[in-house]
Image (cartoon, rainbow, N blue to C red; front, side, top):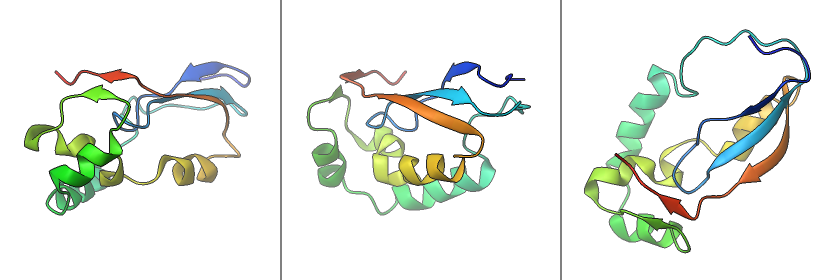
Length: 107
């Protein structure tokens, strides 16, 4: 549970998008799940089939990361646009700052 005014660092949306520092506007009861639900995981799998390594590589300019077929699920366009997602949550949280990655290591 997050109390009103509590600060939290969001999980990374993708390896290119990084984290967001959020401030809760209301009391939030968290489910403990990552921001992606099962439907989102399915959508990522479908999108992954359409992403090329050339597109993924171009999106990662300026970020040191492993870009290959095994990391296609980290491509920024495999997920919903994080700005659109955060706009839908504007009544719940305020985005104070976006932390952009310089290096991404996927285990």
